[in-house]
Image 1: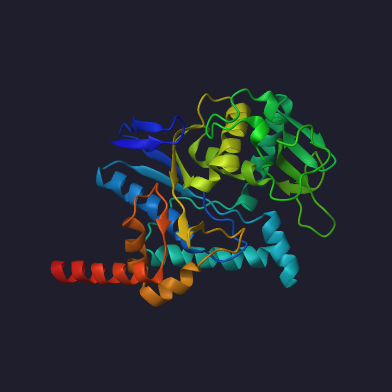
Image 2: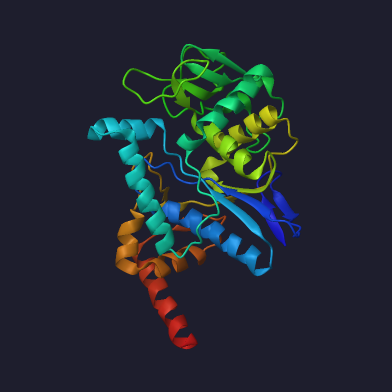
Length: 322
């Protein structure tokens, strides 16, 4: 079978084999409940996993949960609760909605806070090899030390914006450098490390979790097209530099975005439609059918009319089969 590989931007043959295919899907950051865009991503790659299994290809499927992040901390402060309460509450909603969408459960569903030791070990490797440096605000990956940076997104370094989820820190060597470890501010959750009390950066979590479960080289890495830069670009750099591997992931697959009135659905802009609300109204099968009617890599328009059309068409199929 052939898959479109975002790394190289071309179709390539995926060779089936006797041992399990190692597949990692970037799961949600759980500062809030899922929107329809999250559903499209998980359904898209659930279809892939199911298809591979239908060909008798074994798959080790990993889908992570980012349960510590600047936005989760901000939400906890806003509600006056511990960050763990926010993470636990929303993680449960994600799991329920994914089951409602008839998605297979992953073989592993790692949470970032359970892999702090592995994260610290990877950061230590990067510092020791000269790819990262520490400052008062944390530890940063020096992108100019890594010659293949931007091999996935094919951007120019001078045209990029910071990969941070907070304001750019002043004590970085270059504005493009991204955080591996963030020094904790007063009142924030933290873990101890040789660089001081802090927490992992967003990108380092996936590299450490993927390598810990699947090994430093994996077959397929999946996620939304909006993650190509900076998240997946940074994953490649820190994984290949830290673990000293030629290719962190052999295939990079990305689903297209849902559009609402022509604009991308995103939590960061508030331009979202809650997934659970539509599952409760239309049922998970209708929402799933709506997603798979569009090519997974292309943008997909959303409207109530299209959902009604999907429900009608799905019912006709059911009646015919019956």
